[in-house]
Length: 75
Length: 460
Image (cartoon, rainbow over all chains, first blue to last red; front, side, top):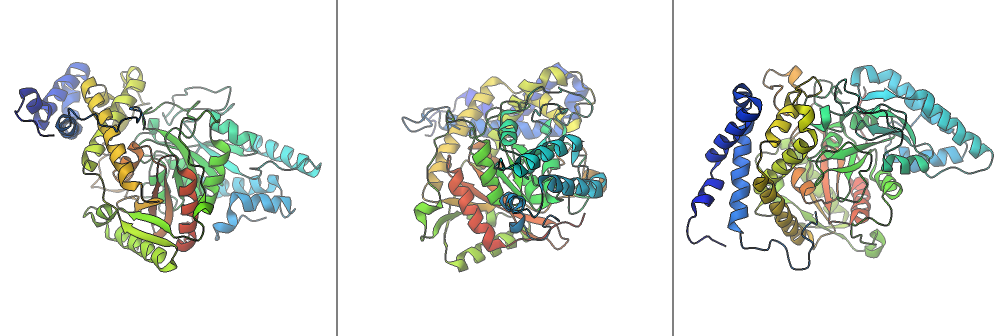
């Protein structure tokens, strides 16, 4: 499925930089600014992963994901 | 009796039991032989966190006495077992590699340990894992070269089997913690279908993905241990009731994950060894090889795996991690801190992607009995302590990426040793089965193993 009209929320969720900054803030709040800086590289990598997962998730937003009859919690 | 150290097939669990039945050795002699190996090499390899020599010999004497009294031998008599320091074993310390933090001194065995002991396996001790089964530098050293990583997190289990300090060992896998150390140390690593083996009595990790499994010398041994250790008939895994016999006389239908073999990130030695293995199989006439595509969401599945693993591990550890104590070295501490900062919406999106990816992968694999792929991108890398290029904050147990997607999908997978690099580090081959099709995968693996004929043992 292709989203016909860009949704601002979609733009945020698929933006690596947005996620990096978000994580930086959350980690700083929880563990301190210094710790957030120390984790900079790991935070950057996780920001990329979050954006990548949301890109797939939102591209299939109206997809039931699984064939009918298959348990949704199957591994 | 001297344990066979040059012939892997002759040293199977079944053959050791046959030697005991034939009167060529005793259970006590088998245990003593492994204890001698520990004396010879353990100081250098550090594969164990606890060895219970007296307890193992006591069980061995009792088995010998019952056998000599005509009571027969249990199915796993002579199976000297190492247990990863994540499983509860009654009377042995459990630390989860946490460097000084004793979680418990369990009063009862984890379910799998109990199943194996009931069948006659003798637990020799607890094998080392990385801290909380993460990717920090292991205390254990590679059985083939001590300056290289043994892989992880089932580091001690893989090295103990490779160095013949035990015949088989228990491990767990969330990313690649069984198959990768198996490949790096030249032994067999088997992870069953998700849900096939009970996790009762195992320190929790990532509940949507983590799976117990085995490190052994042969695929036949892994098949035997699976048959004994599986949980009761209440298991929810849909099981195919077929073994190799159903297809006897017809070639195995094999998918070759060609995009992964052609990937530029793969080292030359791994690519050439995988190609050599495929050539051997094709020449035999028993394998029909066809290229198989991988799902287009492959990279996104890797990302989903990281998110799920971080979030679930953090949920298990966040209270402990706040203390920032010695029990949390740099990598696992960062994993918990990052995992506890991931929003629930991202975790749920990753879980949905996991379902979607698993379905697509199953569709691609369906025509095949099994799939062949590289298990690691290269031989075991140098540990940070031995390399100026590596940082302690980077993962110290090697590259997860070729094991993760299959693990995410809950599929059974096995790593077989198949060759050596120029500097004599082992290289493995990964075989993956359809979900619930563990027996067929193991039968296939035994056939592949015969063609590869890998027989190299470390000198350590």
